[in-house]
Amino acid sequence: MTTSLSLRGVSKFFGDLPALSAVDLSIRPGRVHALVGENGAGKSTLVKILAGLEQPSLGELQQDGVRVSFATRAAAIAQGIGLVPQQLSLIGEMTLVENLIVTQPFQLARRRHAEALLRRSAESAGLAITTDVPVHELGLAERQLGELAIALAQGARILLLDEPTSALGPFESAGLFEHVRALADSGVGVVLITHRIDEVRQIADDVTVLSHGAVALAQPVAEVTDDELVFAMVGSREPTAPRTSFQSGRDRLVISGLTANGAGAQVRNLNVSVRAGEIVGVLGVAGNGQNVLADAAAGLLRPHSGSVTVDGVTVSGRPDAAANAGLAYVPEVRASWLLPDSEVTSSAILRRLRDSRFSSAGVLRWPAITEFTRAVMARHDVRPLNPRVTAGSLSGGNQQKLLVGRELDGGAAVAVLHGPTQGLDLGAAAAIRDEIRGAAQAGTAVLLVSADIDEVHELADRILVMNHGEIVDELLASEFDLQRIGRAMAGVSVSAPSSAASSASASASSLSSASVSASTTSETGSAA
Ligand SMILES: Nc1ncnc2c1ncn2[C@@H]1O[C@H](COP(=O)(O)OP(=O)(O)OP(=O)(O)O)[C@@H](O)[C@H]1O
Image 1 (tube, protein in one colour):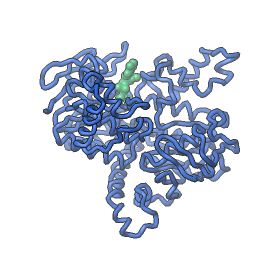
Image 2: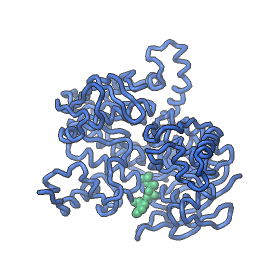
Image 3: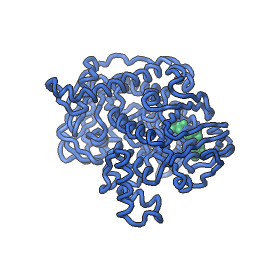
Image 4: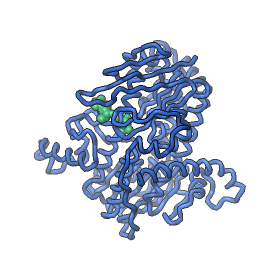
């Protein structure tokens, strides 16, 4: 059974601030509707209204042409509205089956029934999921597919996907889109929030651009050009500064013989050093140990063997020592490094609690903290510029700007950045890349772990490729070769004979097309 869902003249105010203004939008069976717009444009708010998590201040929802209201998430689920939120919502200690049961405890009291339902829903959509381990042991891509399977098991006929690909590499994104396309072809209506124009082209039938809460453009994708989309999203901007060439400095981050276990992955015998002023990019299909490398480099994981030093100080397994040695860290999951329920001030000084400017004799100095927070927010364009709002009320992109800004401010010795621009719009991503270049210019050694090949291409002086927990290839920026990187990411030996290379050619060509169109995005981002 199919269903359509629309918003008619919907506005949403938080206090006096309008997050949405008189928005019309229709989601139709069998069609994928892309929702794009700058950070803070109102995309997540719109999706939350469709999902029953927020109520419109004005206007109405219609399902199959009839006025409806979803007072709660459960009410929307009952009407077939599935949601995969931006911050993944699964409970880490539970399996996917248990996560499904807690959403519908009455209907799914029997575990065997819930498990069969989840498996059946996943299989019918071709999703490979693991149902018998706690969710925190799954990689991000697997969790995303798990959320999708749960939405289907709940009977979703409309799927709301809030930036499902922001932390995924091109392989996982392509895989996810295949499933989404198949679901749409079976009659499901899909809303996809994304910042990437190549993704709009790849999968969407219709596109709506939100700008400052209002609809700036709404058209079938086939009838709109990239330039029109970019202009509707960002207007016009100054070009970003190119990276000046890297002058070799001393080793600041040294990882020697590192073997460690982390969330669902292992790294083996890694040797990486990053010099002052150097940006080393790490690429790999998600789940191949990049997050373990990043956590270990930040001192958060105790390795089985090997060590991590920052300016000669051993920091492995010692996050305090890492912070004292001047290590900045932006983890893949930003929620773990911010305090969403507290005012932005708390998140801004989280890593500076012992700074004498902000506390003395155990007493916090709030005027200084508030002033500092306001300055961080202003410097990094975090909106709204109000230190008193909770960090969790900031849009996803503004949370990311706060986090990256907080970490890079103050001249770090080493910066370990995992997906620093994920979830950012073109302008904000360009600003963060400028900050990363600026930090390197000032002598910070940067380890940049990213799923975004274009970003690594644009920033890195050297590129490492990871597969199955090992570094399988290393290239200088001047040796950048997409086919070679694609083969290494796909686990095909770099010096593979042509028969093996041809088996990887499908992945390499999908990589290539992802990147060609993605480079359109970043070029427009910098040129627009
Ligand atoms: N619960 C809330 N309380 C106060 N303001 C909020 C709340 N939720 C959202 N906002 C504000 O509404 C505006 C729109 O936010 P929203 O999260 O919808 O943007 P977005 O387009 O999804 O951004 P992003 O791309 O960064 O995720 C922002 O200014 C945000 O700060």
